[in-house]
Length: 271
Image (cartoon, rainbow, N blue to C red; front, side, top):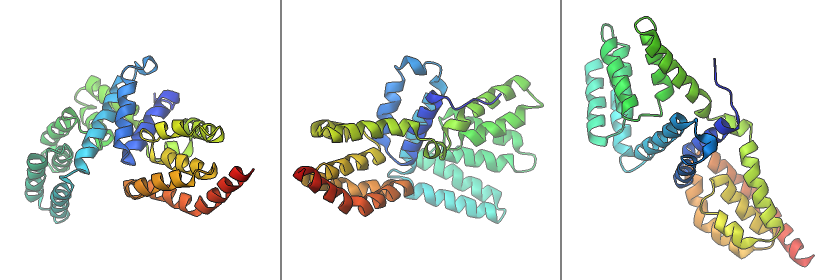
């Protein structure tokens, strides 16, 4: 039976989207908090998955990113022309030189789709999981579930359960459709702004997601603290824009509304 998106899984999915948006520091803090949260004691697998996903993304988009992309591109080009061994050589070199787990999945999937080499491919896919690979974990569990279905039913069911656990929390669309988790944080920011508790807004800022950071800046503008808002915006705008398409969209929204917020702040000051 498929797992349902209860409030705990919704929050786990929210952290997943933080990682997608490259809010790594905030995501790490939230994951660490969950480890000691009794409400999440039955979600140790999902929490470890998020931690692994965070680590893998930081490697993928870190200093080795250019090298990783080069090996992936060269390997995929070889696959396009049916040059299997050459592709495997690129993926193997990528795994050795960058320590990125994704290459084990690429080797596994390549071999799995090659006639008479499925068993060899499964070993690499299992190695990908064991090396805490995560960005392709859902697909990896799907392959393993199918492979073991006629060989080892218990093993197949084990992988199917893990795949189902990841199905919802690894969605990039859910939180953006159902925003209950985000609304609580937005309400907190709006309440602090309305009460002009500026120091608390500043305390909230460093450990917030991109959206909440921009909301805080907007509240400062709306409450007449233009200089403080300008300072935060100038220091953080470029960094936030680079995180993801969604973060860039949120920056554009603030740019469009900035003058309106500033005028509202002036009116607020003048009564």
